[in-house]
Image (cartoon, rainbow, N blue to C red; front, top):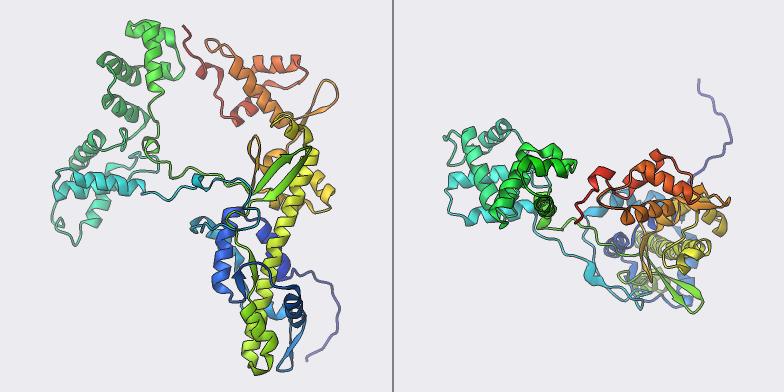
Length: 495
């Protein structure tokens, strides 16, 4: 037996417009440009150019609020059901999208050099295969060589087993002129050695770090004595070299300390990652999202919109809906109205992003006045919740807004997250930012005696004397965070 019950409950639902605002806020400048270009292609109601006149926009907005079509009401809920926009797909594929660079956006009068954007280069594998084909090799040798090259990892090392390469070769030779050939491990090894000796950069296709360095040493133009001793160090005294036992190496090789120093200076010119010396295609070029300029006694904040076009509602389609409404069928009306909602919400989301990011940066400047006045020194401990309270927004909004964003100042470019940190109590009762502590550790290490570097315990004692009581383990953690090695690996030979 069926029963009907009437119940009342509260539920929370995020409107598409709110979701859109939050997602747009999280996007860095270059990724935003990609999304704008895509939206311009998909939505006929959106176009580049200055905003429409107020009267036209007001008229369109009034018509968008509630419009009857076939006796039904078209509202935000109608858009939610009809052709919902898949923003998650944008974020997942964000890194795969080619940015479009155009000028003329708001804020383009501020200094920004687009020459630091690098075009995509030829891949490592394509480069090596092109070199392979330039040599006078048989088709069989090229076939094996290509298989070896495609087996290299991203750093240019050959770490696959010979058995695995042979299995792949046996599969790929089917249906080719080599189908009846029998490849052996010796064939693979011979071709591997040929690649190591002849193909650039030196060290490519090495099986481990030792072999990589030895290949580079053999192919270098250094004098034979240095070359011979360097190879000997890596084959027989690798552990002593790694721990910089200069005196022992001098004794074992029967050379003076000056020659040991020359060997280590030469080793520092070699590349542990073979291919990285010829290509920097993976280097990240920072495009600042915000620009801060000091004019007289105040700081002005601009959004970097060098690559972001101005957007507006299409005048043509807006006129079609408002003026020729009677001549349009219901499907056309619904299509125009839904796309108008999308376009209007998209423009509002862009404007909201601009206002929010500027507010956050202005609040950061107020909290970090000393940092900006001292050209990047004396960073104060500030939390995201402090900025949230200042501008009356939620902590999650601040976190979303600063993630992956950069700000250009008169004294450098900074990650926006770097303005937030924990604190450590100073001897005078005040707090000091953990970022400042890292900088102090780095400064101490830069000034140390390189022939007798300071241990983490000694650095801890120096900081304690200056009023910062920090344990040895904490010093080690902060030292590693700024990519500084332990004391014995920082040791150098000083004349």
